[in-house]
Length: 385
Ligand SMILES: NC(=O)c1ccc[n+]([C@@H]2O[C@H](COP(=O)([O-])OP(=O)(O)OC[C@H]3O[C@@H](n4cnc5c(N)ncnc54)[C@H](OP(=O)(O)O)[C@@H]3O)[C@@H](O)[C@H]2O)c1
Image 1: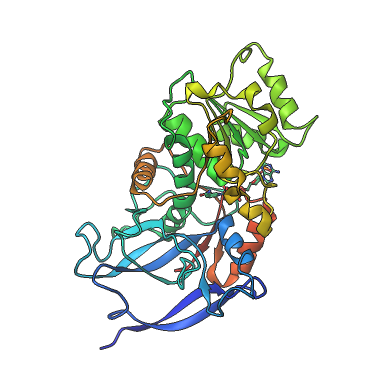
Image 2: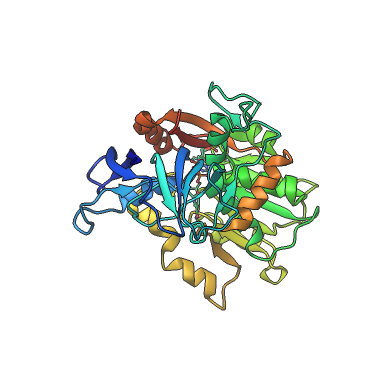
């Protein structure tokens, strides 16, 4: 008996062609190598980089093959090669981050084939202690088990939502050898982003950092304080966020204090001329860390996307005369943040935030929401109903 299935994937060809659903045949018994597993994908989350990749695919210099989209996934292992480590078994419910550069397959597909040793950001879905916070009215209940030992679809949605953003936040906090305690001070630009949502939960609930201040729109201030920010400052009121930050730092609690880490998760260059005023001296291992580069927030033009990879980044990073430590984060796949997130979820210390869930066929609406730059949490596409 053959096990030929239809593989449905969301793909694009170049930046002149819209993303579309493409179909192909997949023989489940022969499609994988000895070192690979086949995952039936239940849910996959969108990330701004998915838009970025397509925008950078100029028709004149790219080939005409369909290219897969998506990096975050959750699902069930349905086949495994003989050389796959015993930790991964048929029927295991897993999630992870599948990195690819214009690969043929992305995670926005009902099947994903990968070698777990080459894609180490992979883990087993853990039992919950808290449901994900979801903005819109979506049927996600508190009970993660369907009574037969299988995760409910809501658990797959929740666990597709975090690998990329949690990993980025993790590397921003752990990657520079900084030591955290109750006296540490951290400032986050872009407090409402999904990356910052993970960041503040790790900072407060796991590392017990004393003060985490977030900069966001005035309408998001209260919500971000509920997630864990000790203070929030608006970027859209008064003379702008630098002036608003100055006002806060003049209050008795902060007089004479500076930050150990300024983390940019939205894209700004406004700190560069005033870094000394807010960031502790370099010798104290203080850092300016960016996941975005100095681009305008939530714009996705090729020039802006490339800014994190621009010439100014190595100069800021390696120039021996630099005035402050600078680090650009590039979301390297890593098992340690998958394990930390799983532990934090099971202890109720990390609750993934989901903006909205879309059916596979409605992927265009999901991309429109991502493009709006207004999502409050992750946008997830449910692939297996
Ligand atoms: N380097 C890496 O490895 C890596 C990995 C993941 C993501 N990223 C990048 O990190 C950034 C955040 O990604 P994400 O998925 O977390 O974003 P996201 O969840 O889509 O962020 C949406 C939020 O951005 C905020 N925002 C919009 N305009 C803003 C502005 N002018 N200033 C400050 N905040 C603004 C909005 O909240 P308000 O209500 O506050 O406006 C909105 O809710 C993206 O640029 C993404 O490309 C990088």
